[in-house]
Image 1 (cartoon, rainbow, N blue to C red):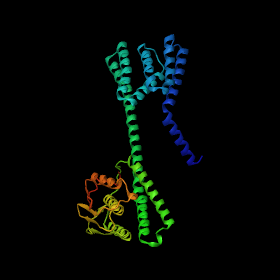
Image 2: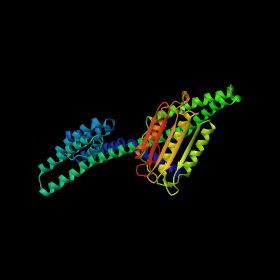
Image 3: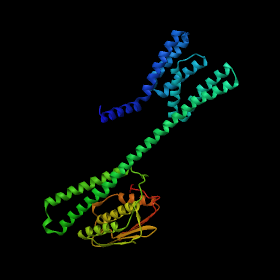
Image 4: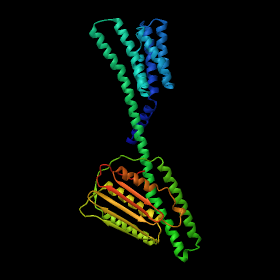
Length: 393
């Protein structure tokens, strides 16, 4: 058997145990109870018909317990208590079944776990006091029974909390995955399709050789349909997205990479006929943490894409970034497009995501829009204590 096959068999066995642990455990306890009952009858420990019937009923109810745990647990517990009160030497399987019942009921509810542990404890206490004996022996028996039964209630609650924590982590992983897909779709596919559509429309309007070209028109229609479908997927993913609390190691960068990125976007917009300028101001000795760089860079990318989608090309746009020792300030302004372009109509999910991330980091965002001007001012603190590692919705 190879190492891979051994790992597969081990994984399959663990999966079976995690899925069918209650059924396997109850089957084993039912078999133990049945065998012990038969043995006790053979040696004369159990002689009465009532005693044999109660022990047999415990075995049958234990075997059927996985079918309806919440319903069958109580008659099974009652049967075990009757055996205890009658001071019948019951099989060890009955005692182990009672412990399992307490765990199962405590997993469902703390109240049910406390009650299911209290009933056998009170019954054992009454029998111990009735039988008499030295006080020290009675006290030690009481402590022993309390540890047995109530510890099982705590085990059930611990298992429930652990299951809830595992489910919460699973939901967080799923949300993080959806957020990552949403972010990647928005920042790469959607934005690139936006530039593609704008480039095709610009070339068709300004270059005579592309005017009336059916192939160019078909490419434009395909790109618009792909952009609309991508935005629909982004909106679907955004409905289930939430903030991730995962932390990454902090690294520091200077601002030259952001400056180069701003110059690159300026050139792209100028090639499409836009008029505007970008300004970046910082000192060489100011280090920018990795989280700040990711958040600010993502916001700047969103600003340029929104200028392309919603700003008037013939008007003037301005983007300015200023980095100080306390924070990074990003300002942007443009003139809204006079003629509406249905291709780029969206729900502004990108700006909403960035606004939420900046506010959660302790920063501020101010967005003002009129018929003649759109203005954004964002302040992001350089402290990394509250900053998210990713821009999520």
